[in-house]
Image (cartoon, rainbow, N blue to C red):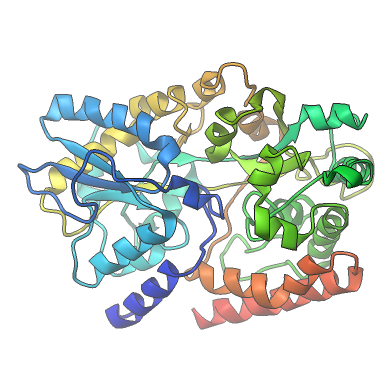
Length: 450
């Protein structure tokens, strides 16, 4: 991809509601806020002025600032962390890529990493890693390592990983006399509970379940995998969403949506707002959003359970592969143009070595980018049991967030051109089945054009 083509695509991405998060999705704008510590968010650093760091999630600011301040105390280099809204974040980076000034250190995401790496916009970390005794790339989640590797070179270090869990409001279940979720629940159990609450709560405007269909990572992707299909195959060259297994997962999703908050309601209010307004009993959410619910009014009623499983073979128990959680991971990267590459890498290493990863988990910033280092995260929210996010790794299966070279091309197209009618009319089984066929074609064509 030449630079002109890259810049055009990058600017298009900046204006697209890309899927979140730390993960991916509409949750990403929660990182909006004022710049922290002053300074120009786009201003690169000289050795004397310190480092400018860009992130998009305000929930992580306090913990990351504490870690960065510790590094500054050791290095003597000041750090300014700027929190930028999701859309503005990508506009900032794409503007820097077209000749402006990029931040020195910033987050990379699976939607965009390949373009930035291929166009030499990120600092090549190979020599730094080779001379850094505190970094061992074999200790990180391999999917995250591979994501930020291009042509055999590493352009970002894994910052974190995330998983998905079921969030429910105990008070709503109690009010309508419905049994509360357990870790043994299947998606069929979710459907039955959602149906019971939506019927009992109709006069109160209460729904049993809500899902923002544009939030694929923490939503419908997981059902596709639970029933044995893949959005993107392991070789990143195909999809099986149109298979019988893919259609079975999406049929389960259709059933749940048929008794859930209608998509126009979700579009107007948002799943998180519906939940926190006591108008929705269940949603699925990613670990990057815990703090938003932990600090919300009424949080004493909020409970987390393991992500339900898909009873694909109908035997009434969770078999291997039937409980799958998408995981993603951000990468800490530096601009190839930074005026202080040594300091930029040193800060990245401080965030990403095992001590930094452990500190991040202890502070409740996010779970770590390496296995076995996130246990402390369970204790970061006193009074709220968030262990479901870690236990899914032992009691289920993780799959890495599906991506290809130009992920947002097919992501956006299947959302609008394949599934929109099915989202709006979940009563029609045939529409959902046809949507899966359409999505199969869209993804295959998009990959062929890459």
